[in-house]
Image (cartoon, rainbow, N blue to C red; front, side, top):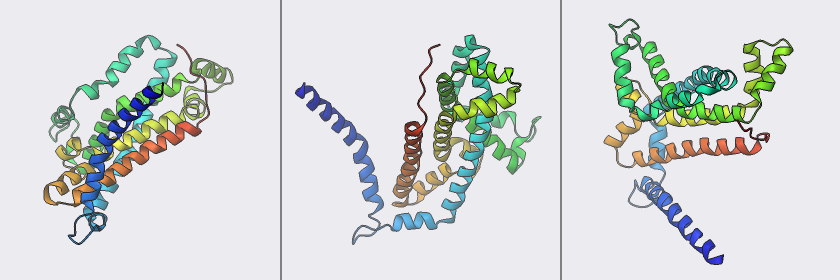
Length: 263
């Protein structure tokens, strides 16, 4: 028994080293911009760069809009599939996995082909239209994570009973969805929201090919022209992503516990 525990710790240590050593090396390199010793100058350069502030703010705003639109689209879909059409759940789950199967570069070229300035819906003909197109693309990319997060939340509550009780009391579909179902799955929705935000902040292909000032293209541009600042950006991006992961864990820990239902 003690031997098994020893080897478990050995495997855990190897896995942790495989993950942490490159990160520590990147962090150490980001501090080595001066020969005389470690300094935070690379981080100061990054935060003082107007391009960083502009692209980070842009991606953050697009990410928040993506979360809102994603919830508005996916939440009712997951609810009605679970309530009225549980037999098509495998089909819906397969469709939500399509963004993982189709490379983003194919997706964005399809968008450009369909919504160029000479099409029936010329979204790429204006800045606002391109921003909307980028946001909708992010909604598609985040769909696998958002749908599964919401569906997992719906699985922990009795959707059928809650809906029937609210209907008997005179509530309409919209009120049931927004005042009864949504508050019961808020933790799952926020988990999907944090994952969506992490995806949007690091995404490169869609923002680059649609020529929008996203944070992903900014990181690529800095990586091609600077030496130490890309490492600082990588650490900043890592901290942001893991802050989102920690927030998910805290929400899951402090959320009200409910018994998982069996379909």
